[in-house]
Length: 436
Image 1 (tube, rainbow, N blue to C red):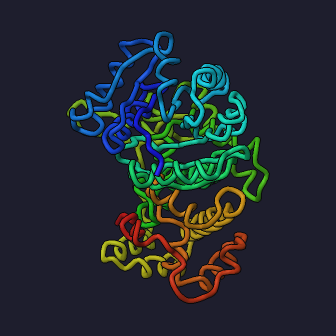
Image 2: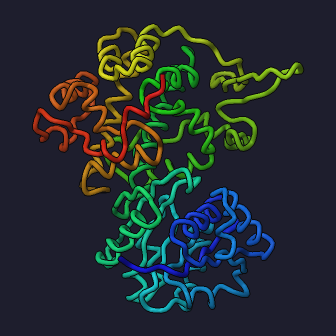
Image 3: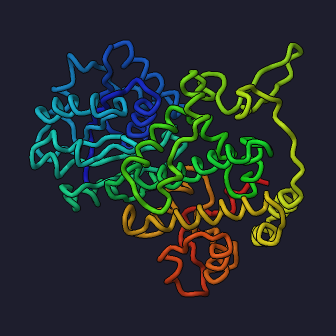
């Protein structure tokens, strides 16, 4: 297995940079140069790295430095240079040009980008550098979220690609998803497709509950820790926009129109209301004078924040009770047989999620297990293949998608009935991802 003893983190002061440094120093036992624009920021990154893994045993391995004074000499002695600067070609490409001049042959260079073209970023390097250049999309916070999307491009050395994957899996204990160099890679492509389409439906049904209704329909009993729109609010509406705009511009599959950002989201972004990090976005949380927590939701029609409503959705309650008693197939049977608009929407979104997750096989990932791992480990969502089993199997799931008028992906259409469709049970028990 490839030996990585010295690593340079470029962009060490951010949450992702410091968190990644902590993982590499702790599990990889590597010396880690932590570089930032200012030495004070780099030192802050060192403290964040220690805090992220809750142990100061790694402190001697973390060395603070600056781009101006230390970049070239640190890169020259490194086995791996991990770049985590801002998600922008304008920022990453000049930094890559400096790294390219200093790296020694055989040194791996990677970026944490969540969607930029890896092939374009690799162009800053010579032939050897391009062979050793990859995307290593860690999820935040790295110590808790173990997914890493490892992205190759046409110029990658596939032997090095596999060696790096083995190091990430075995040494750094990542759940590695191998993806091709496509917009947003696997996890964000699947996840933000569903989140943005649900956001579009919130606008469509704004008079029936809008944002709050959509999150209630897609609650924990559908296999996710928080509502999809609450997640968009948590991630940040500016980040959400950047990802879906990129997908809308650079993809052209059956879900293309679902990547169009709803107008009300743009209105919130323009007003600086980006979500939890700015205090309000789709949701707003406050405390009353007596200290009681209050939750409000954005009213798409009026532009005001209304008290978060309570809904009475009988099938949702029934399905949740099934989940609470560990009857996952029973919960899916409730969803399949329920009547009314809410049930129809729930079935549509689950069918869309299954279909789109499995449809990226071939283009984005080599097999459905990579798509399943991306969603299970990266989003804590029940993977699509597990849904197939909970719905009763291949035949029943094909029928479920057809009734919802959703395209049946080739992987599912060609699957043989019988046996377990989900193959990651030993690595990730999908049942644990449902919330009652």
